[in-house]
Length: 341
Image (cartoon, rainbow, N blue to C red; front, side, top):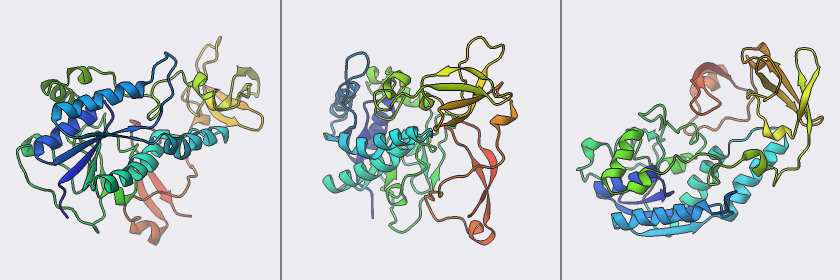
């Protein structure tokens, strides 16, 4: 199968805009589609989705490509946001961006554009690469009209982007193999400054100057404690020292805090950090300094691993597998051993 018609998931930001630009220059038939996943106005009284949609449509006009939008608000609420609220209530710290990519962008939206537009591939503005479409849009092939061969059976690997600081494979770590086979990441071998300059040169001046997309996936930057309290019951509790069991203060809810972050206790000689949370008593256990032994673990338990391709043979044969591990975006990878159960 050959890739000829590519749908680009346009967010109204510079990254997806340049992704569409590169594919258009490469000679693909490109269609831009904007996902509307969150409609509520923010604390300042306007809906960011409306502005982003206008910017996405502006890009399509400049590139002379079709523009469409799809409403996935219900899907996002049911498959991402509701799940995020449940995990907070259980005392966990979810990552909605990972869940959004897994269930919305590369499942619901992916299936929609494949059926609705009969697309051959879905492109996004993520900084990532794959083992079969690693360099389709780098400068040395922009003038080429070659069509990238596409295998229906080959397992595709997700690879880190050239720009290690912008690399977003952490957020793509649970997307399904079926979608990855037909995913294109045109920015995988570019750096952010280059992408911004390309946007400027293409006349996307306003979009190139937009602030970086941050905050919760499709919801954006919010005053998180205030925002989450609209959906989760507030249950105040106490900060308890793991050193001597003394109560050091009160907090407004365990869901506001995650393990490892600063507790924000006033009147202390040194910063205190969250060690654990007890959702039954609503106590948050804290320790002094970021180097306290209570913050470190030699062993952690996980849910079943999501393998993008096939699980490594060593895990089956030895029940152990040497790997690199991170639990947070941009944290250094650390050597670890995965033990099968």
